[in-house]
Image (tube, rainbow, N blue to C red; front, side):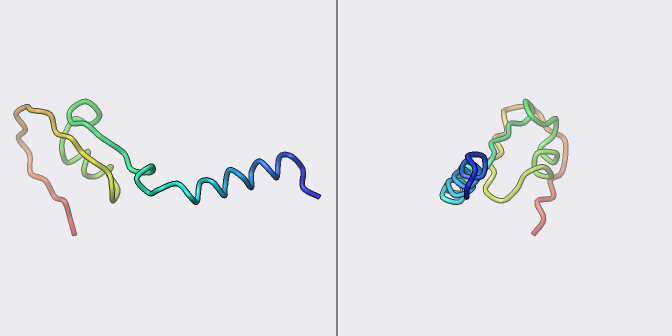
Length: 65
């Protein structure tokens, strides 16, 4: 017999599987969230968006492959 706690956990798990992947992406802003563009790249995952605000940046980026 299902308890209310198990039923709620089951419903939450089921709904989370139906959420589109865009819901799991993150938006980051440089320099608001990260001091450098490279720091934002290092912390990002596939599908994330990095917005770089106008400012002088003296660095090299390694996006990787």
